[in-house]
Length: 574
Image (tube, rainbow, N blue to C red; front, side, top):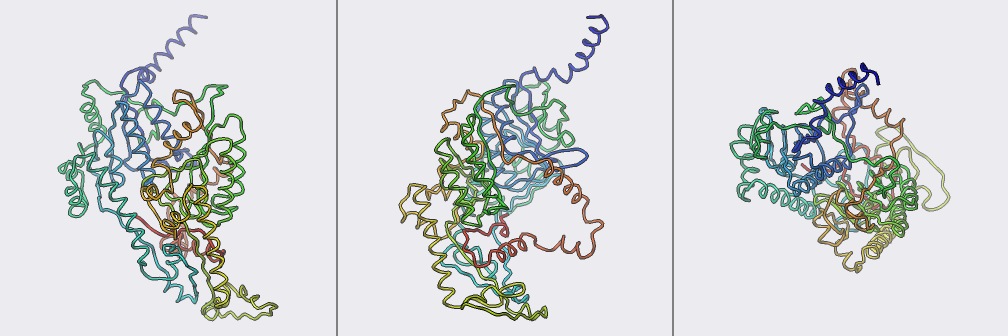
């Protein structure tokens, strides 16, 4: 090699040395930066899947170079179930003798609950912590539909199956007060126990924070010992020195977005990757989100085929099915349940329930080898309901008249301009009742068979009743409390894959190039704000409850259908 070539190589190594040297140091801190995940066409910052985050934490836990994690969630937003799963993963990381420092800014009770996993919590000087407790509710549009001339008949024969109440009532029913009151009690108990245990508070002190204080600027939060320090990077560095007992300057690696990074580290840290030509066993992770429908939502035809096909692949040793669905079509849910039943003859199939896996979402889950859910997952709702929307003056308001001919006593049932022009007759209601109760009997019988439960025991926890993950475990509807990472560990165990064996992961459905480009284009469009919108479009953007309109459209499209469905899109839990 020529002399000038050697000099060039040595010079390049010297230039790179400051960037690479920390990777060989001991007790580095990994900044887990979960902020700034919006898609951007010019700078493709992507939303990071939970599985990838958990794999990064798992790798850091076994990485001798990593002494701790800086959890940067100063502007991170996620559902209650995701925050619980993330806390669980970080607790497992700490169990290996490592440290966690959390950095928060504007945090609510759930985000604070996540942060309490840390050995030290640092809060931005200008941040605020709100601890308001939890409330559950939904909008009721009965009077709105009356004004529009839309009639609704609730075809309900099960005590807790309340998915139509938003259309037929104007306040909470006694059944909803009971079932969602119990869910709120479970969630509050979980949060209270977590926070008091982590921050050495009594139950009385916790209740005082919720009921008397509830809003704490950074200084007040520090005075109440809810956080350990206030500030930004310098405060985090001091917190790390304190929890590690070392005055040595920390070095950092980074997972996440550089622009919003607290440390500014340019040393990237990623999940462990399989080696080239690696023949390690594969765990397939399949995501099923949305209504249980044959084509939209979970897309049952495609999903069922994916499950069956993957189970036949030689390297796939287990399947983890991540379900986020409040139900819809019983047929679609059963396509998935049947595919799971077929697949588990070859490989274990573990269901990981996300925020909600209820009604049809539970139907799709029930035949798995093992079902796990977070303690705050909404699940159960084993029941069926129907609804009948009809014209109750809407045509008159719109100036529409309808006339028709018919052959058959019930042929006019679906005639009308926008909605059927009449309500159900008593004989038709009786037929619908038989139809709904027969489907419900089929549902409970399948639960009993798949869960190995007596039918009477299923009936005792059915009738459409909603449970938290904790309640579902006590009711025998799931097998364990855990998140996606726990589901993967269970899949490894059931597949007899040793803990020290490398595993590859394959996620489905695979994103398509066109879909990703459209997502980024739409994201860029909506980030432009409301400028340029017409007045009518601006009003719609600001005031129309899109989930409510979507739910109404879905119900009318499936008018008269008996469905295992839970109205969750139009409820709120704060």
